[in-house]
Image (spheres, rainbow over the protein chains, first blue to last red):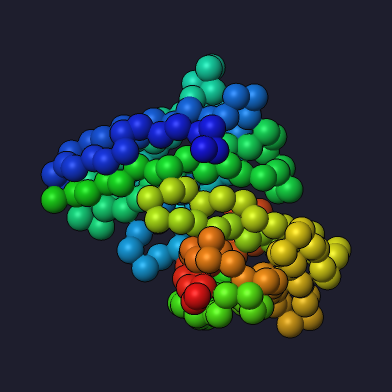
Length: 114
Length: 109
């Protein structure tokens, strides 16, 4: 158990809908990262937050947004969903936000868009 | 364009032998490299890392080698054990972290 929790575990929805994925980092970790893993793809970095502020942005679509709240949990909002958004979404956390920090991953949320 | 490539989608190794997983990268600005291990239905788990100022880092059965001139790194697992069967991701960190697509390692009894 990494100490990072993600809810829900599974999510099935329809095209055009909007969903929210939630992540609680390990106790004491200030950074939260979001990743997408599609079929046959590696982990695609989406976005990083550090202590409530956006720190780095990766391949995140404009239809997607995220935020980190004062209690350090984070939410990833996916809107106008398309079939291609079906994927595993992982959250990770680390103590700080520097490159050498070990990232601890949650178990992931599997999103299926029908 | 894939900046981090793991060209072997899968690898089978006999238990007790050495497993060698390879990773190539294209961006010379990467300065920190990591290996993660992933079991089914779980998130990736950090295994070992190496800074670009080093060419080797060892942690128990796991050793990572970095060849900057060839833009190549490898993970050696010696001896391989059944519990090592998993997907291994190589990652490179520069401005942002980039992961390879992974190599599935099967340890044969």
